[in-house]
Length: 276
Image 1: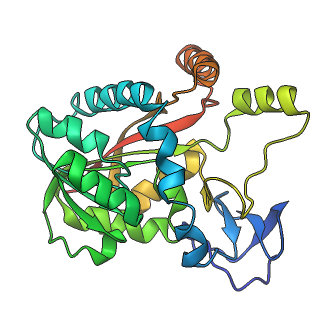
Image 2: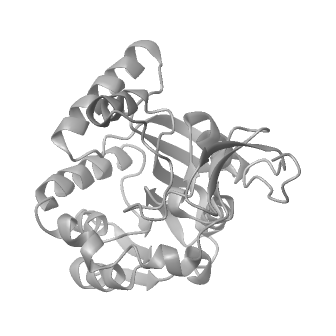
């Protein structure tokens, strides 16, 4: 893959190895320069859009709603340890519950969402200003927000570095970015998956419920955030797991991280400040 015309979204390198072969024409590549793992070629926008319809969100609005409310409250509590209020933009706001909770605590809220179904639902449920589409098309001005959140969104982005650079532009000086992404190195969860299914979990299939185009480790997400013009304040486990069994596994991984520094938790949570 050393002669591939593809350039790494993080470091610009053109050298890769094949990490996983998926259905044609897709492969999962690992950059030889920085270790970023990503899908190539990227699926067409129409392939991505068709995944996020009413059926995708049905569980969120039904059986899982109580668990997800608890998850969003925990995330908002964590955010407010760094900022106590102000103008908040949630990129990829889905059903808008996070924005709804934030508004109740006095935040001035906005969101973006590519799913037509979710954008309409979020606008009605949260009362926030919701832009339907990609962040660069929203037209927010420089310094429009004090905080931008991206909860399990960046891994779905065709150009995550550009997205983070756009976030930097719309944050005020010293503004806060908070994001979460799945952890490529979630070894305990991978071990549990193999024990249950007798095979390794795949990184990509066009038939997956969620299409993860980029797979970050703590090292590569930190490098990506810093390359986009931020200073990392904290990188640790994201405790947004709602399934009880998976939450137990993730709790064990979080304990190991606190005791030994092993970054094998299920997902990564990052707090970063825009460089002044």
